[in-house]
Length: 249
Ligand code: PGA
Image 1 (cartoon, rainbow, N blue to C red):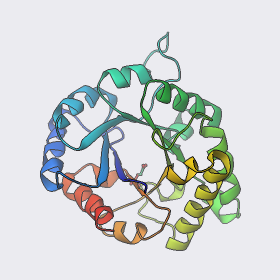
Image 2: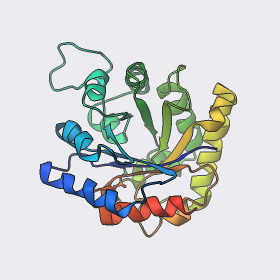
Image 3: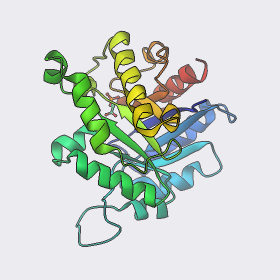
Image 4: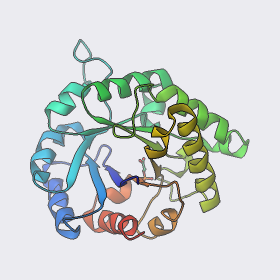
């Protein structure tokens, strides 16, 4: 049985005062939740966020890491530093990083490898553009990203795959349930092909305009094990109902 997971990506939002949302979230979620909850604040808040959720069921993750342990990489943060701050997860390969920072599959694989080496869980993002979707290239594109971005050392305990169609991120547009199911079923089959039985246990998240209003419907897809949530993760009042929708599936 795969444990359910909802991860919130705050992106470049949030200052110290917004940590109050973590306290609010704790109050809204049952303490014995069967759903894993991870919040990924900006790196400036990582350490304080870890302190804020100490003793609760919420875990903290980062939004990116460098592939090297240390070095002359101005402005970057390594997986080791993220673990040192108390975080347990890191998102790698988000489409905003792929687009704005030119990250390719090989870079993302190296980052994921670095994360695993530090005992972090890597949340590896893949997703097609709208043009790829319209030209029928979606499944080929995603398969290539899955193979290219996911390290051979990946295991179900340490690796999560997030399918995020780029055209659905921050747009309010969501694929049909059939489209989501088609992709997730294909990803499951590819994971099993590559990792054997272990591939059955790797969690697959859907991301892109997940809201309290559409979460329950998205979670009806068999191979959707949870969600990666952007905008709706910023406020506990929006995020908690998404967690509860998965919890009660
Ligand atoms: P969104 O972002 O929920 O605001 O569409 C999702 C993401 O980028 O992870």
